[in-house]
Length: 201
Image (tube, rainbow, N blue to C red; front, top):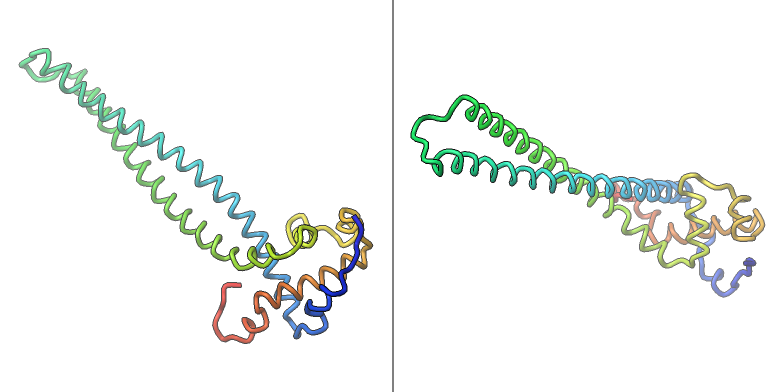
């Protein structure tokens, strides 16, 4: 792969020299945070999936326990026609069954509450990634690769990226600056810095 600059394309791309003071570093910060958020989302999705499995298991155990408790109370007494009170052994078994069901109910409630909190957090993080992801998706595969290697962990140097895409270090450095300008313009970073209200970027 060789780096052949498209003059007509670059002519319409914002120059790094036109970026107001602070916009470049602010845009870099947005990209750093974007990739950190993607990593957090991956971990959250795995944790949510694990908790959903736990919740399903607890619901299954709870249902099975209730069924066994009902069967124990009915079949072992009424269906046998036993008139006297349950013996101490059966009372103990019933009590233990009730205590286990209560513990399962508490664990299930805690798991469901934790799931709700994690899903709210996941939704908030995903919302934050949408604008940046939309801009990155307008870039070429090569440009997205350069941005990802530069701002995701572990961060690659310009020389390392150059070896990957078969460009010179200076060409990669120049292209990163051009891409930062493109992202800054697309996200209107300058306006967000001038606004007295936080934008979430």
